[in-house]
Length: 256
Ligand code: DAK
Image (cartoon, rainbow, N blue to C red; front, top):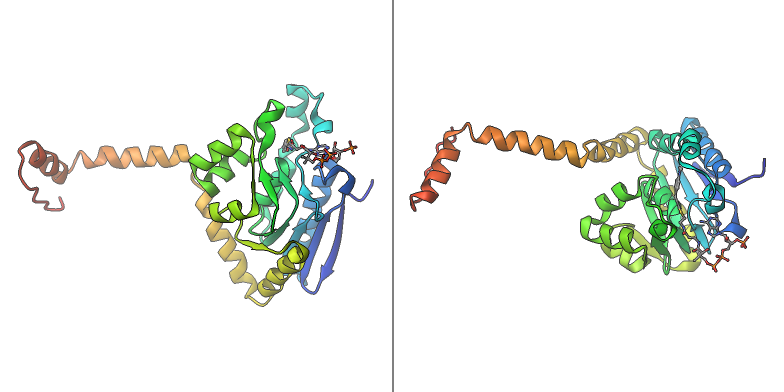
């Protein structure tokens, strides 16, 4: 099997580079399987404290491999169950830093959003252009982009398929650092080296705690909110507050 990714260790950093430069690192099934296996191996390796995922300067990844799925039908896509591989990234405990550059599109952007800290080269293009292929993002893009950018921006990007550059991505909160193009890899590596100086268990726990933010779905959150809303109609304060409004007087709340 060709090496769809290249791995190396730099100090205590496990580096994974996507290695399909002639296809702009389009993510095919072997690439994702190799990437996830490498991340899991680094995660288990006690010598490694964090991981760095990078592409080439021209493309972090221009999406999932369109050629690989172009002729697949619904049943074939379902049976392939490729998302099972992607989901394993979420089980990696050590921090993953992404060095984003060039094109970060579709599945490439979704892969990047699975990473924990994103360092982007100036001029990097981010987008979820699946709409232009007659589909929608399938590897978490509609959910993660909306959580990262908010509904207004996510709708804009996902429905139009347009890209934003690194400056806009920084302002919108999709990435946390933008650095000169010529030094993006070194800058991301420097972030990793900084993480390597931190308490390893605290790093894992901090990552886990932040990820808990994703634990409730919007639907669960809305249902939770609704129950609390109904419960307030069992309080005196609700009667007092609304009653005072209707009677055009100031409310006097007793906290009951
Ligand atoms: N898939 C396959 N090949 C790709 C590719 C892609 N996403 N992107 C680029 N390539 C290939 C091109 O076909 C070309 O190959 P050759 O013709 O040389 O063999 C080579 O990379 C260079 O690309 P271009 O010649 O097109 O280069 P340009 O500079 O002219 O244009 C571009 C760069 C990024 C604007 C253009 O390549 C482009 O529009 N690429 C497609 C971008 C895109 O639509 N990305 C979203 C793909 S859909 C899933 C998980 C995730 C997903 C789906 C399923 N499962 C787990 C089931 C996600 C879906 C997507 O990402």
